[in-house]
Length: 133
Image (tube, rainbow, N blue to C red; front, side, top):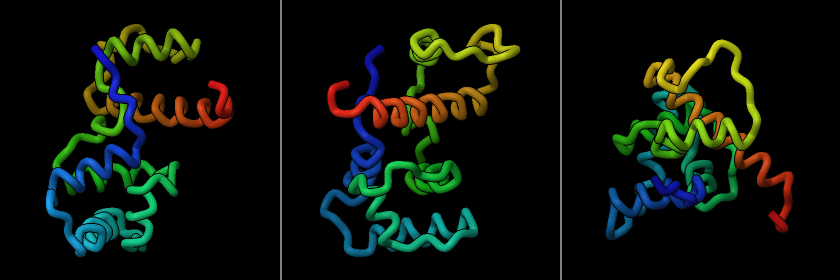
């Protein structure tokens, strides 16, 4: 299974383009209002826009989950989704998860959360590696 290598910003921008193919002046306002309501945080349209264009790269999980919810996508849309990929990343990164015998032992929610954490780890490790990676 091939991996979706688009950045978080590209994935979010694709959601906007899918929802509003002709564009919408109110799009980021609508998303920000929804995210603010769901998370109980002060989220404005500029923050959503900065996420969308890649100026904010580390997005809080609750905010990301609310964005996914707004567009009717699972949180896993933003990260790896296959068990094979999760297993490969665990092998490649030499991560050891105490008590985890197989990926199949995970609930769907735990699987999604693990995928999100692995994506964050990939981004952080990629940032540390610099441009030569």
